[in-house]
Length: 137
Image (cartoon, rainbow, N blue to C red):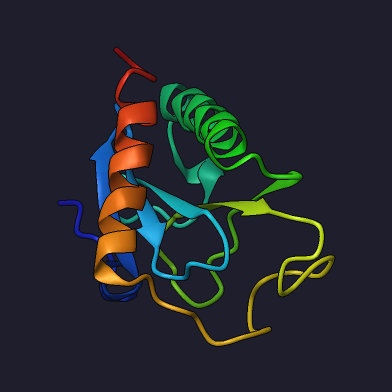
């Protein structure tokens, strides 16, 4: 049975479900930072998914990247599946801007997260949900 890892649950807000993955928003307003989590139990890496799910997660990664770029007018979108801290398969889709707090380096460990204010989080989630609701309709 699929259960979201406690650290992902603690550090993110739920956006919506796509055919394979739950889409989450990381609670750090420095970056538009999504996390895709395939709802498959006990999977650590993309190659552990069956062939159909591998294709689906790649499509979802592309749709998430396109959406982040369009919604937030990013300069670059970074996509990574690291899993060093959280073993459950999850894919980061992070919108980057030249001159952001970590540019041009990676975002991990540079600054402590700067959480969204409640109203900012609600508006950001709504914005993403509207954009992403039709991605697989």
